[in-house]
Structure formats: structure tokens, C-alpha cells
Length: 288
Ligand code: C2E
Ligand code: MG
Ligand code: MG
Ligand code: MG
Image: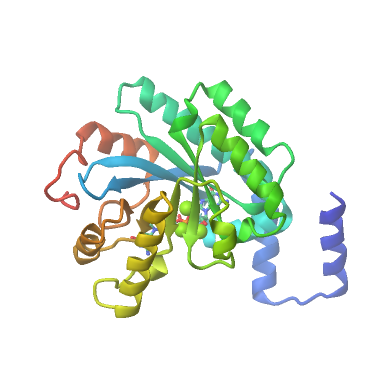
């Protein structure tokens, strides 16, 4: 709270009242109530096994649908949630909701899948984070192997020793860990080799145009090799077309995710897709 009032005080003395600032402030006020008002939702995007074309899991992605302002992009509100510390409460809701939903799908008899959840640095660094995850898993009865936490490089580079200890404890619990947006952050190889992770998610900026852009192709090939030599799997996100998918398949990237397979879907639509068994096909994973 001290932090919040500090920020507000700072604002009073620098009244830079431009449009962006107004919007930022307006969003902040509304975001505070969004959780209670149930304006937040999780969408789910399939993660597909490159070899078999089968669905391997899904990423939970936060959506904010405000009654008047309509759809607000995570790119807009996640940074505000992080600055204000609201991400801690919101992030807790996200993990609980994703675990509850995943448990329901398993109970329905769908083949068990792993749900991955984005965790922001501030959330990950909370002293009780490991205990929080443990209690959510207990409450929801979800086996830890069906939860994956996606963490970015940048949220790990401060207090590296503490973060490694946290990752170890999560890993021992049986939770999966991946590094998101890999290649865009500031981490070095000396850290990377010490992070006890299961997967790297190569950032979309490298995946885009990989079939035609020589530099991206070189980067993706190198990261696939790096991941496999380090014994972690490689996930490519932002796969939008068949050429990109074929390239990743040829390079033995393990999992793919992107609009070519499916956009992120509301839970009900995702469930319909599961029920239709749309991904249990090796031929044309993109066909609909
Ligand atoms: P991210 O974790 O890297 O998620 C991937 C983003 O790429 C998502 O954007 C997804 O909708 C989008 N995407 C998926 N396939 C494609 C594709 O083929 N082409 C293109 N152009 N985009 C694709 P989204 O949902 O807007 O989320 C943006 C970012 O917001 C996420 O990036 C993540 O960093 C953050 N975020 C989303 N949900 C949460 C959350 O619950 N907690 C936290 N801390 N961050 C979240
Ligand atoms: Mg992610
Ligand atoms: Mg990413
Ligand atoms: Mg990201």
C-alpha cells in the first residue's frame, strides 16, 4: 500500500495529463475491480505435438472484457497490473482458475492435458509463491504434472540464487517449468544452464517468417539444438502458417502453438474442440 500511495503522490506533482496518461489511470481504476466483478476470463490455446499433430496441452491466456470499454488487450493491462502490484492477486486467480478448469476437463474424461500459466516476475518472487501453488493444487485436486508455469528470462535475472531455489522446489513438487519468450530477454547462458526447467518457448519474433527469413531460420535451428543438448524440450509459439509448421517439424522442434492450429478460445469453445477430437490427426493439424 505504501508503494501505491507513493506512486499516486508522484503523480500529483507531475500532472502530465496527456491521453495516454488518462487512459492508464482509467484502466488502473477499473482493473482494481475487474477480479471481483468477474470481468477476467481465461482463454485456452492448444499446444500441439509436432510429430503426431496431437494436442499436448494448452496455454491459459488472460482476457479482460470490460462492460463498457469492451475487450482490453493483455499487452495493455498486464503492464499496469505489474506496475501496481495487482498482478499478484490477478495471477493467483489465474493459477486457481486454470487448475480448476483443467481438473474439470480431466474429470469429464478427456485425455489429461497439461495447462500452462504465465507467471509474472513479481508474482514469482512473492515469499509464499511455492506454498500458494501447492495449496491451489491441493484445493483443486490437480496432479502437479498437469500444471506448467511459464516464466520469462527477465523475471529471473535478479536474485538468481533465490529464483533457482524456488524453481527447484516447484520442480520437486512435480510442476513443469518453462522459459517464455526465450531469446528476447537479458539472461545469459551461465544462468540458463542452472535453471531447472523442462522447456524453452522460443519467442514469436524468431518464429515468424522462419521459412523465408534466413536469420530467423538460423536462430531457430540453433535454439532447437541448444534445447535438445540441454535436455529440455522446445516449443515454438506464433506459428501462423503451414510453411512455418513444416520448417519446425523438419528441425525437430517438439511442440508448436499458433493461429495455424487455433486461436486462444474461451473454455466452452476449447471444450467443444476437445470433444470433437480435432487434434487427434496426424495428417493436417491445421484443417478445420
Ligand atoms: P505470451 O505468454 O508469450 O503468449 C503468447 C501470445 O501470443 C498471446 O497473446 C497469444 O494470443 C499470442 N499468439 C498465439 N498464437 C499466435 C499466432 O499465431 N500469431 C500471433 N501474432 N500471436 C499469437 P496474448 O494472449 O495477447 O498475451 C500477450 C502476453 O500477455 C502473453 O505473452 C503474456 O506475456 C501476457 N499474459 C497473458 N496472460 C497472462 C497471465 O495470465 N498472466 C501474466 N502474468 N501474463 C499474461
Ligand atoms: Mg506464455
Ligand atoms: Mg511468449
Ligand atoms: Mg510474453
